[in-house]
Amino acid sequence: MSEVYAVSADGGGTDYPVDGADEPDWEPDLEDDSGAVIAAVGRQIKLWRESAGLGQAEFGTKIGYGENQVYKVEAGKRIPRPEFLDRADEVLGAGGKIAAMKRDVAEARYPGKVRHLAKLEGEAVELGAYGNHNIHGLLQTEEYARALFDVRRPALSADDLDRYVSARLARQVIFTRTPLTTLTFVQEEVTLRRPIGGTMVLRRQLEHLLELGGLRHVEIQVMPTDRDDHAGMGGQVQLLKLRDGSAVGYSEAQLTSRVLSNPKEVQVLELRYGIIRSQALSPRESLVFIERVLGET
Image (tube, rainbow, N blue to C red; front, top):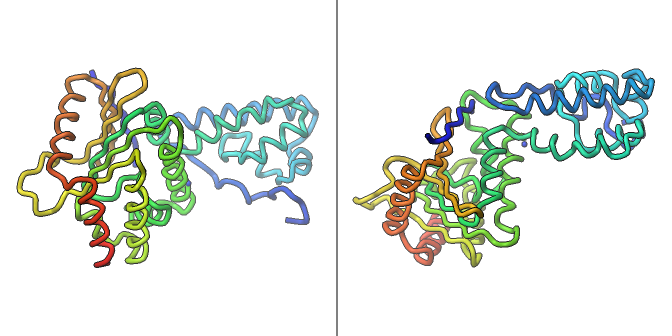
């Protein structure tokens, strides 16, 4: 059976933050394991603080945070920033044991489905994606991503919007890490013309596509709207070939995302994606097409 993941749709003269300067009160998605991680980190900090004989107010003063901030971190209601963990480690004499939790906390900042996808992308030697309604997340500029999340309904809070944007941008390390990952993308023409965020946001997004398309390990293709034979009418497709030789598919719908590991299902997606690429403009023709759209925008 294929794996299926259901999800619900980044003072006072002190050098450290004061109460309220950190993350807002935070509630994890019901299908997300982030809450357990943050709760465990909070319990550990509380145990170290109590072992040191410090009250929350005194501890907060020593690390540059207010008592309420400390309470919420320890209760798992607020995600501690790296500076909070570093200062707590130093003040409590934890010898690096608290600071070592920064990596777990950093991962927990992001929605569960994003962390899972980022893990798969981190293991990929080849990634191919067909996008039919917006520019693919790995190709997005920060302002385009922010505008895209900003038009969601129901609306995201400002803090959730920051969280999602940060998570999306963090995944783009795939372009620069070594060894290089082979990346191919097919974008519907309409995604190049829809002015998400306004004309200037779109222009900079198109310029970004031209820059990425010029990289040796990246190929971007455009599927013209006038194609009368189109293998991608079933929706977007994403394929990842992993270091261990296996392959998985990934797809998103309105309220769910699916990771497909069944070889027969992956084979179908590979067939479709190969045909989609053959029906689209070539990478060279596509860059010329994008330049023309940029000139018209």
